[in-house]
Length: 134
Ligand SMILES: [Ca+2]
Ligand SMILES: [Ca+2]
Image (cartoon, rainbow, N blue to C red; front, side, top):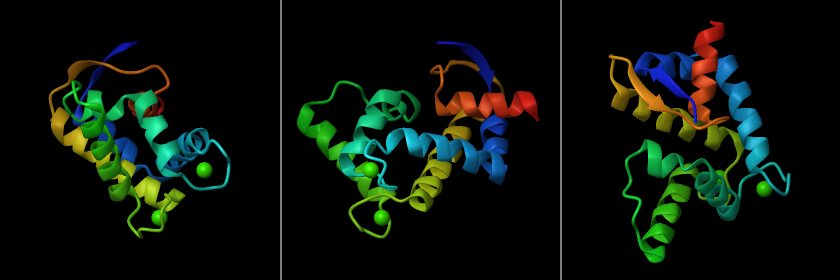
């Protein structure tokens, strides 16, 4: 994993750049939508988050959890995404929640750059790339 200097504004600028953010989210969403039906099911969302380890790494959730606790955690994450309670997550719901998650990460990072390990191809790397090309 690459080690990069990251501060809150890198992430915040990325989220605020609507076009760049939507484009990045679109490719994430398509990757996550395994059966390509245009929405994310509970299982699709969960497997994507497990792959990204976004929750464990970025939001400070404890890693050592029982399977039942993990199930409850992923259920609550899904409920957050599925704001209209339709049982799946469409692209708009996805973008809205992802921007909230990223802004929460930005707040956590604060204003002084810190060195963080980011996942190759992960969402935070999208933010770093965005800053480099800005
Ligand atoms: Ca799907
Ligand atoms: Ca929904």
